[in-house]
Image 1 (tube, rainbow, N blue to C red):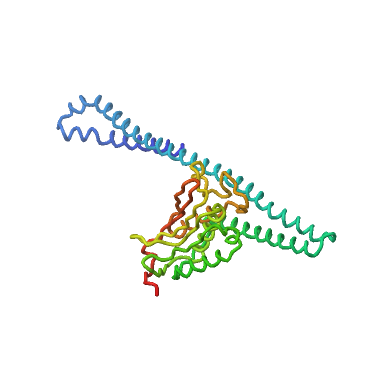
Image 2 (image 1 turned 60 degrees about the vertical axis):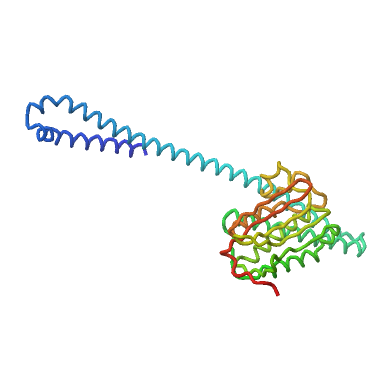
Length: 323
């Protein structure tokens, strides 16, 4: 780099000097028509040459310095980004190993109990149920880790197609209505808001990923809502539709607003019975972005939270009155 700059300066200085010496006398003579004028102006010729070359060299060197500073600034930013990435990866791996050990320890523990002949068949049945539950937790965690890793590396595939939004939301509603989670939250009313002006919405999007987002947001809503309501669905807007999940749970405090979309963040105040791994919101944020929107929220501590994102009219195939 230094050799290139030096070569540029040398060549520019040589060319300007060569051309000046070769043509300056002829130029002055053509203007004045007198050889005496050429002699008189010899001194000024030198000063003029020095001034012009100094100005040109100044701008050249200034440009090279600015370019060098920009390169150094980019290198510093790249270094800081790499260091931050390493720290995030270390924290991610540390959290991941901790979260994996929890269900894995449960699996190994119940396996040992099942192999112990001192327990009755009824006891072993309970152990097997817990073993199955921990196995499902571990499988879900591994799937979530794979999802968040693919999202971070921009390797997550979106497969868009035309589908009926109301049908998709009804399937999600029935799944949660019949789930163990809903059974554990009998005091919470659970409602689907899937129509405004009795509309049936046909979307061009990825129904699998959209369902994944709603499942994650609803799981969170049930985790943090012990009484009141949970509702989800969509509302018709001027620019498209707004999809949402809303609850009357504990809400999100101000100190957590920049952390809730971070992987493995479970909230500053742990909720009893919350077996989540803190990946749902991070995955949902990434999926919604891949779907072309932005997952946002509004929340009031001890009153509830509303997560929402929009789908533009360009992705809405039709809006038909429901029969």
